[in-house]
Structures are given as structure tokens and as C-alpha cells.
Image (cartoon, rainbow, N blue to C red; front, side, top):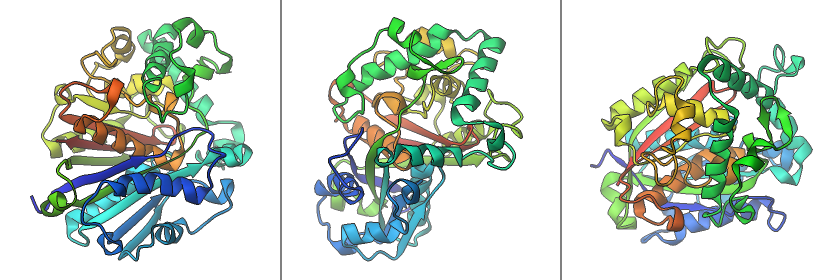
Length: 389
């Protein structure tokens, strides 16, 4: 038990276009929620601080955000680190904090992911253009949109995945987002399949409703050593497995397949083996639906559907709230929002709340095992966590 790692606090800000708060205030919104419900907390509690932030230099003209986080929280931790791994920055931060606690370096840590992308959308988009191989791919016009569009076209041609199946992911996730008051598109409510299918084209075959938005948001998680968990809360959630793998590629050119993500499959196998679970044990999961095709492929990589049958999985309603394995109950990146540095942390917050039975209208019944999956680049880097009650 002493070598196990527990999540004892979790908080998330409201996602969206947050002109009402500064970068500092957005950080505080999530961190305060994560800490406020804990017992026996003082500034000395937090021996580690990880700040997950992908592009603050571009969007809010602020660097050195690890130290900034320490100033905002008023703490003097032994370890302070800022993590940048593009869209998987948040889950990488969680994994780093988990590893530091597992190793015995520290007992308790706080991880805060934060991004304010709508402060300067032009610079946020510029930052996203820096994610692929700028020298060899970016100059030819490859973007996240066109890269995942290539994956969608290939999956459709190879396996018969349909336009309706892609749009069904958006319909499901907007339905979940409508039940999440902190989701970026909460006020939009549910959308029809017809609306999702007929939206403006972005990068064929992906249209506007196939793509996640620019988002301002923050999320925070407090982790501690197992034998200390009950000092903070009577509802600890345990990190039972963690996996992280990368392709030997930053872009699409060096990937052996853009529809069969070997690095994700390896990360899943590592995490599931550590946690001693199989796909059928998953009660709920948050996956990286940056584009609708990504969620469909992720069903397959998680072992929930056979290769090429991810489209059928969504079509049959298996990933809905009432399905066999509810996916992206928060609304996902598609409807909850995708503040790059905060996304992976927010996924952990959602699963923590689900396992605690705190998810309101989107609560999955009797949820005991949850999984998070966070990726970056053209699905070249993946981090998977298994959580349990």
C-alpha cells in the first residue's frame, strides 16, 4: 500500500473562451477546487509541483510557468517542473508525478495543467503548427487537420468506416457535454446527426464537428503515497497502471501505419498489464478525441473493438452513456474542449469523479475501473492510465 499512488484531490475550471479570468486566475480556479476538499493541508504538504503548459510563451507571453505556479500556490516544493509534450503534456505530468512518488523521492504532489488559447488564437494556431516536423513536413502544409484527415480517409477506404459513424462520435460527445456544466459547448446542448454531417468542411473528410476547438481551461490533481491517502480524504482513487510510448516519428512520414497506432497499443498493454486488467474490465474511459476519427481508432487500440470495427462500435451505441463501455463522458475534447496543457489532467479529473460517483447526469452506474488515454502529434506519443476505486 505504501508504494501505491492515490489521487486525493481533483479540480477543473470551466472550459471555453475565458475572457473573464487571467492566466493566473485560471490556474487558481482548478487548483483551488482540487485542494479545497482536502483535510490536513498546508503549504508544506506539496513536495512536488508539475505544471503542464504547451504554449504560454506564445499565447500569454509568459515563460517559467513552473515557478509561476509555485508563486500562485504559495508553496516551496522539492521538485518543480514544467512539462511540454504538446497535447499529451497533462498526462505526461501526471505520469512524472506518479513516478516520483513511486520512487520514494516525495510523498505528495500537485499537478496543474493550464492553457489560455483564446487569449491570442492566431498564436495558438501558430503553436499547433510547430507540433509536426517543421523542417520536413510542416513546410509542405501538413497540419493536425490534414494529418488526421489522411487517417480518416485511409480508415474509411480500408475498413468501410462511414461519414455517419464519424459524425456519431460528435453527436455522442456533444450529448455528454450538454450534461457537463463546465464543458465549452455545454450551452449548445445536443446536436443532431444531420447537423454534424452537414457542417462546413475543414479538411476532407473532416468537417467542423469532427474537430476539437481552441479552449481556455485548467485542471488540477493532488497525488500522494498510498499510506498517506486517508489523511486527506475518505475517497482516494488509485492509479493502478501507467503506460507511455512513442513512435520513432514526430510526424506522419515515419509512421508504419496512420490507422494502426503501435505506440498506443504498447502503452495500453503496459498500463493494463501493470493494473492486471483486460479491456472488458473497463467501466468508463476518457480518450483523446481531438478528431472523431481518433476516437474510433482508439476503440480499436484499447481492445474494445476489433481492428477496423471502431465505426461499428460507435454505430451500435457501445460507447454511449448506456453502452457497454461509456467513452468521453465529460464531452471529450470535442465538446468539453481541448486546452492543450490541461487536457490530460482534465481526463484524470473526469475519471476520478466518475469513480467517486460525482458526475451527476452523466454518471456511469457502478463505475470501479476507469482508463484515460492522451496523445500528441499525429498519434505518435501516447500516455495511458488505469484508475480504480
